[in-house]
Length: 360
Image (tube, rainbow, N blue to C red; front, side):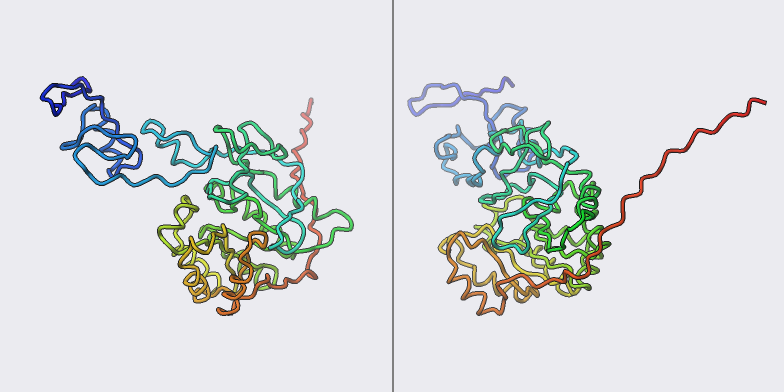
């Protein structure tokens, strides 16, 4: 068929119908939508689609509205770029010149942070880390450009090596490092690169205290290291949740695991003896989160010991009352800073010396 069809108008005449293009958020399998687009025809029993209200001519129910996407984040949706839209941004390996950075998070202990990644593939709404996508071809020290459509997550492939050198500096004093203060530690790239795991191994080797926060239950892949650090009072973990309401959290954490999975991860950490708490973020207005009390109750039942949030966003009194009601401390646990020992120098394998060939 030629991709058009005749439509009988109320006056009895014929009007040309435009080729039907399935909407990105229509409730149909992707293969069905692709097959209909290739055929160029309308689905049975539907009329022309109105762009203003996303309904068809025969009075079907409105299509689900798309989730609000962050301004300047992703390209406009169409079937042709559906895979690109739903896929995480590309990962670009880079070599960093320095690792330890000062952070300004008032809800984090210590003064220094370590981030194996710059840019976050989760792209959560209202999260300051979500805008730190870097231009493709940039470096780990380049200023972020959140408006670019061609953005990448920068992976600091030499982070463990550089951190080892910085921890060996004369006069360095161990204080809890904020691991993952600017980007998710366990985004998709971590499965293949293992940069977060390499940092944890180094901190365990040196007896260095560290706080870790994450939105992903994938941190359980490193449960062996987390348990070993916690056994020496060197680790505290906070897992991020913003709401349990199924109509709320997908709008702000669309690419994150479901809250139930993160609560299960919290429970496994608690049972393993790891001090775990709730990172309440992004912090939503109270009237947009009707299940906040249920959230505090759920994390308490999962084994959370503490809760923290950004104190710059208000609601301090209400949140403090909830924390007190459910027995959650408002501060991170005190970690041991006396066990730190500077790491040994990295011993590089020397190239084999050429052997002299006997002439006689």
